[in-house]
Every structure is written in C-alpha cells, then in structure tokens.
Image 1 (tube, rainbow, N blue to C red):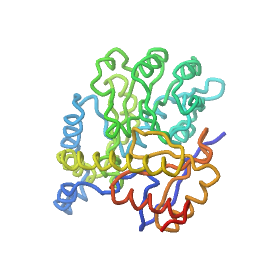
Image 2 (cartoon, rainbow, N blue to C red; image 1 turned 45 degrees about the vertical axis):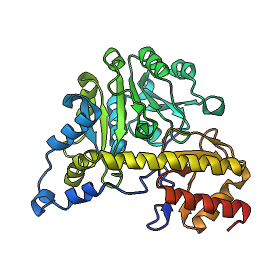
Image 3 (tube, rainbow, N blue to C red; image 1 turned 180 degrees about the vertical axis):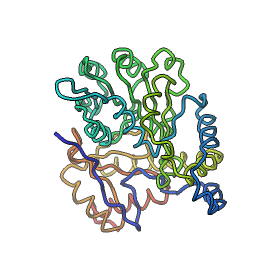
Image 4 (cartoon, rainbow, N blue to C red; image 1 turned 90 degrees about the vertical axis):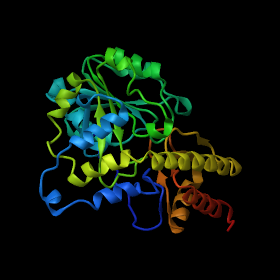
Length: 349
C-alpha cells in the first residue's frame, strides 16, 4: 500500500477554515521585520543564530536541543528517513501511526521505504496506549503520537506517552505538538525527557504564530537522538525570510495571547451552535472542532463553500464517517461560519 498527502484546494478568497491556519495572519512585527530585508539578504545564504536563540529561549531549552525545519513537515520527513534508513526486504522497518492522523506521517514513512502499522483510536476517539504498545515489535523504529490529535482534538495523557516511550526504547517516539499552543500542555521541559531520550517533540509556528506561508517548524530532543536527523535536514532548508520572521513573531507575546483567546472564544461559540443544532462534536485542544454531520456532511461542505466558507471533509478518516473539521480562529470568522451552517441546515438567513 502506498500513501500520499491529500492536497486540498487553497482558495485565495473566502474564509479558509479547512487547513487549521491562523485566520488573523501573522503579527505586525513580522511584516515590519520582513520589510528590513535587503537585496543582499535575498542573495546570501542565511544565518540561523538569531532564529535558533529565539526558538530555544521561547521553549526554554538549550540551543543544541533545537533543530529548525522547513515547517514541521520537514521534521516528520527527517525523522522518517533517519529511522527507516537500511529498511529493505525482510528487514523492512516499521512505524506505528495512531489513526486518524495527519497523513504526512504515513506518506513520509512510505517515501523512506518503511512499513506503516496503523493503530486505531478507541471508542469515541479515546487513546488506547496498550494497543499502541502491542503494535511495537523488534522492527519498530518510529512511533508517531499527536497531542492533541488532528483531526479529533483529543489529548493523550502524559503517563501514556511516557509508558509508550519506555516500552519502545529502541525506537524514536515522535510527539507531534503542532497544536500544543492552544492546548497549553507540552512535554518540552519535562524532566522525563532526560530519562527517555528517544522522545522527540515536534512544534510548528504555522498555527498560533501565523507563519504557515513562511514554513518554520522545530524539533526538540536530546543531542544524541537528534544527531541522525541533523544529517538528514539540508544545511539551508529555512529561507532567509523565515529566519528573520521567527524572532519577530516570538517577540510579540501580546499578539500570540490575543489570538489564543480568539480561538478559545471561537470554540465556545462553535460548541454552543452545534449543541443547538443537535450535531455531535468533540471538545478540542486544537484550533479546530470535529463535528459529525452524518448524511448531511456533503451538503454542509458544499453549502458552506457556496457561501465562501471552506471546511474540511474528514469522512474518509478511520472512525470519522460523516465528520467535518471546522477551523476556529478569529471570532468574526467563526460567527460567519456558524451563520453559513445554519443557513444550509435550517434555511435560516
């Protein structure tokens, strides 16, 4: 079986609530920083010192534990290539992926020549740590965990993550914390990481910080575990504009806090609206809400798109039949989304 990332339309106009982007855009300080770029900055290979220092300082870790990547996608690919190196024939290595999941995990493992072992979430998208550990074998080289999960928004308990890392001590446990800014929970800085150096934490600055178009992510882990990944990531994979933008973004804590508050309020509005419409949903730790519209899912997706509100069809994901993922960002955008869904389902203007 082969895997490939599902590319979806990215319209230039309308409300893009289908890609979990920051719907407010980046901090004004980022634009100001980019406006200082010169012709020479574009022509010369970038220096990453300021960007690494800013990232390490924000996360509270040592510089040598940080690896900047071209979006978190490159970090996922680097981990897959490093872990699957030497995988072939009867010695084909495996990666455990808890599904439903971000499809880049499977796509990258497949591209690196590994075998994907899928472990489904439990009832009502509950996390089954025992099932994950049961899937780990002597051929397992990589375990992907997402906290909170995409597309469900559900969290994984700290003790479950640590138990899996202890059980799979011969493998990299890649903890994707792409939505940790919204959940407010992270393993970065946890003393357990010194005891379990096989854990690598992935972060992105696309969601809460609004840098998706510039492509900046980071991996955080022990220097020994990160060493094989550093050999995979190209020396200048972060462009000069992204390197200039990251310190400016991280310097604007007020903007960051404002956007997190917008997301929290927007999720509350979505929960209330879905309850009134009798639509089942899951409370989310991310900047999105997964709702089960059942047989009305296609009608909601098409009707919302006709009103220039774009939502994500997740009905093909395991256990997500009839489900739609709704991005939650700026309050005004969420209110427009709710109005569109009401029009489609109830005919109410």
